[in-house]
Length: 164
Length: 216
Image (cartoon, rainbow over all chains, first blue to last red; front, side, top):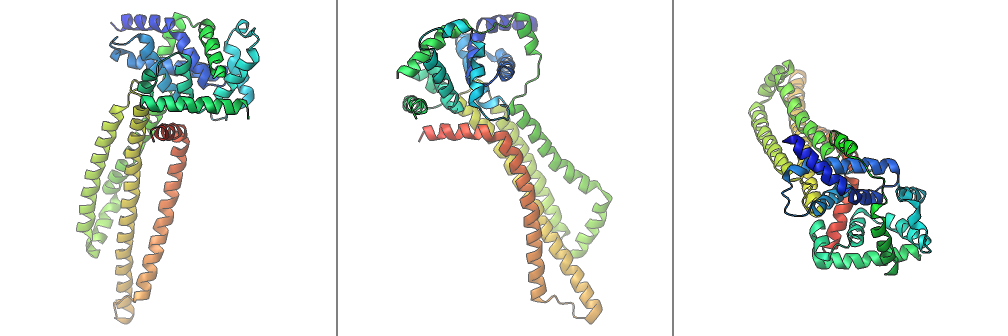
């Protein structure tokens, strides 16, 4: 029973691992932290899996657990965020995708997003993942209106970071 | 905003750009131990709850306890001390129950706000438990020492001049010194405590404040 559950879980996890990688990319500064958070998220998902009823899609369920782990459960490295570290965060992305003219602007955007706080990052993550405000609000436990207001504020904040 | 939309385009394109982890490695990860903050909070909290209980039991079982019971009886505050002890343990049991109740509510699948609130509430129970312990010990310390000092002073006084009275100035000075000593000791404990949890809960508190601010 346990073995088939594990097999089933690993299979689903493997298929959805990019989602976890993306969260790790947003919440960590280097490869070690990325691996560390990925592991913690995997453990938390596995612990919660027996209660997963399949009412929602695995990915929807997983990103909530993953996001919660990144924001609340993960013990981040004590050192402070340094802008130079942000560069290394992009190491996980294969080079070819930056071979566009917007490359520089995208890099600056990633750097700006890294400067946001944990909750703001969660909103940005869900925005980038094309989640609607209803889902964003439900995941964070706030009202839809507040999620919208906050998202607008974040856009303003990013603009300010980019054009001080 | 063009910036964020540009990022969105890049973000969705980068979906398949991460180094993929194989099934075997994922299976191995499931066997690893969690290092989540909740786990640490749980371990530390259990240690704190146990420390209070173990200290109490050790004190009541030790030989000095027999001697101190005699002293307390001599000073006429034994009943008061016993009543305090019973109330103390009842309150401790209540705290443990509340801790367990709150801890069970922590679920990684709830909304972020609910999860943080539940973690903070669980912590708050232990924080109150520690405050309760500190205050109880402080009060008991002041009461027992006051009676001890009063009894000692008046006995001495009877032997020396047969008066057996404690001048008001001596009494006030003694009480002030006692309160000061207790306050300093309690403050030291409290600061150490705040420091430990300040480090452990800093990020969590920041996120909690952020979510609260958003709902205003």
